[in-house]
Image 1 (cartoon, rainbow, N blue to C red):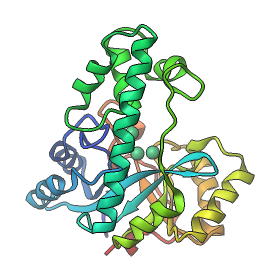
Image 2 (spheres, rainbow, N blue to C red; image 1 turned 135 degrees about the vertical axis):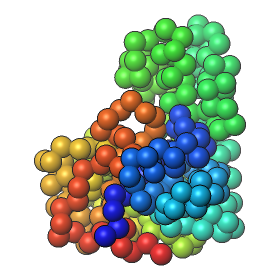
Image 3 (spheres, rainbow, N blue to C red; image 1 turned 90 degrees about the vertical axis):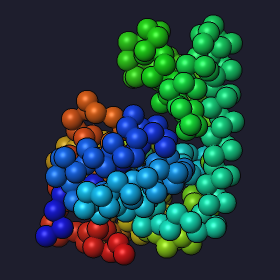
Image 4 (cartoon, protein in one colour; image 1 turned 60 degrees about the horizontal axis):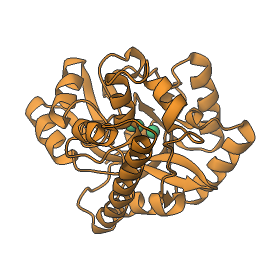
Length: 278
Ligand code: MN
Ligand code: MN
Ligand code: MN
């Protein structure tokens, strides 16, 4: 009844390549009826996306994707159905943006020191008015011919243990979930297979996540699209009685499995997070 939907995607408000208006237009063109905009640690694109969605008769869910720390690991928690104006969330996101700015500058300094001149200015130009992220530096490294692709940019320079890696000073998971819930949203564990966790560690994460008030998890992910992966995530979702979410994690055109609306289907017996949204 609700049609095609996608509850995880990015715009130029963080590290996506399309403006919020372009993301909504693309979603509409692909037949997506309900879309959540979930930029990294910001709701700056939501108002524009809402205007574009209203003009096209598309339902826009205000969202955000928080980078959080749990046991010294970085995890991503998507907040869906948040009130972007809620003061607690706003204050939290302002704090996150300061951390992102500092991290963006520090990565640039490290790359420059490693002899990659122009890295900071290059990432700055690509980020526009958004904060510089590793994705922007990776894009600069690719576009300036320093590496062959995104993967190599992370392998050589940006991932943990490499010369330009700077740990993120993110918020504690429990606090991040509190911001989301305080703003009326549902906290969703994003792409649970994207953290290289063993089953035992994923269980610990889900124990802590549900204890802290987390309400959903992504089961149908553009980043883990294989049927086996969906089945596995479905199993965890049932076991923890979480609401099942669907998200492509769209950032840019040209990646078919992460196209808007292209995430695999949910197992039919799972309670859909979509149905719990206001
Ligand atoms: Mn991203
Ligand atoms: Mn993520
Ligand atoms: Mn994402």
